[in-house]
Length: 606
Image 1 (cartoon, rainbow, N blue to C red):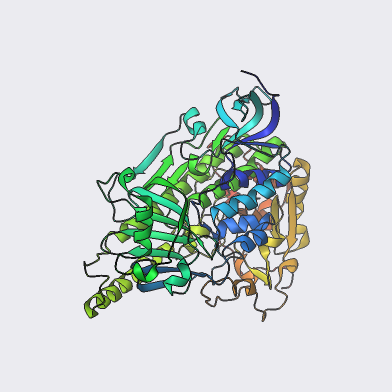
Image 2: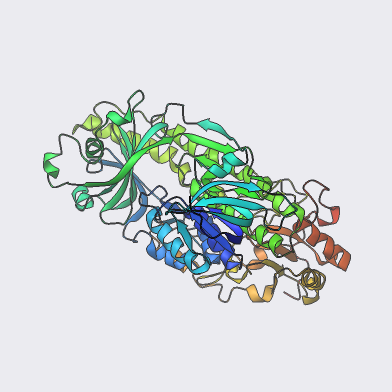
């Protein structure tokens, strides 16, 4: 077999779905060379993910992609809501708008089809990746030569012409999906719930179809909603709007004991759209199935390891979720945003041995945490009992629909009130965080602790209309100084010696320009239900004099100038947060354990 020219790069990325493309963009923004291969011949043609959540949109905002992604998402006339219906063109008996407009974030969730998302991300990735995105290039296998080699990863790749070439890389990111060869090669095993438990919905075998139905929304005579739950005595289904006009993705629960291959695809879709009784009234309700196939619901699987040597697992290669709550892809994006700055640090020489070791220690607990959410949402649906007369035109059926609607609005709200889940990830077990002395606040999926805490996402504060404090953070480390200018001298001088990127912000630079202005104006016309949130000033939230924020916008340390008032103390703090020592070599020095500080501490005459 013929061979192609070998490639040398800093990071080989296997997989070019949303997670792999995000890794390419993040590393490209950091001027780290990548080579991206995927055995797929194009970006996604069948949508799986439909929501890019708030935390992912915050990451994309940092990279300057948020506006284009939101523009490419569902149009605003499609209400961000879940409609609960007997059939798509049947009776609507409940509707739950998304109650997220008061979340403490500059970026609300974005309803965008995976097909569109991948096209947008691919466009940006190709502008950054030196070799572009290599579609149709299949990973055959790889070896890791260990620490003694400059490019220890040697991966054999087959291109579309059948030629085989070798990629020599310093690191490998496995974003190669559920059947990951990278995961198998490093000996990682998926553990958890495998979908064998029977459920009324999202358990066992599911069917997914991508359809085009130009007249569907008009024939439903309902206000457009981005998700539509179909519930009747005979079936359970879910439909997501893809373009707000004529394209939809349809999910159908295959009944227990039924072989999905015996089902007629058109009949399955037709039964979700309209009943036999109403089909004649919808005689022009034609549709085209563009793609489809089976998948498995009820999964909550997490790899027992996320890394080995110079190879790392992210996204579906590391964890497989039940998609309720939309945490699968978004957890994967969180994986790469955690990993990529650490790879940059080691490649450019300012990261230590413990920095890369922190990846699994920080992200695997998030995989376990987030995996539990989808199966819990699915379990709730087991209690939704539907009487046989549910679709009748009788007063008894109408009352049954009303009662179930009330139950659903109460029980299914947790799936959407997930501000804590999306924005509340905290790295309490990290080896590169100066941990707080105070006990960790409870981790609630539906609420977010506003306390400044090491290991947690830095708090968001609006500074002026459309401008978040996040917009002032650097791509590297950011040091917020709420006190005298000289308070940052030791940390800044040590950072300069180490050659690491540090941006310093004085609190005066972050004062809200007009406290009476409507700072969350960008949330007004987002299609989300609007709720009023209290206005906060930067000094209400950043309650320590100094706050050190990592490149992934998590707090590395917060404290007082006295904690780092000499070169030795500053060097020791940087050694900790840059992983200068191997994992578990020593606990956080006591002087860097963040304590609660009096808000009345003098901060330059404020």
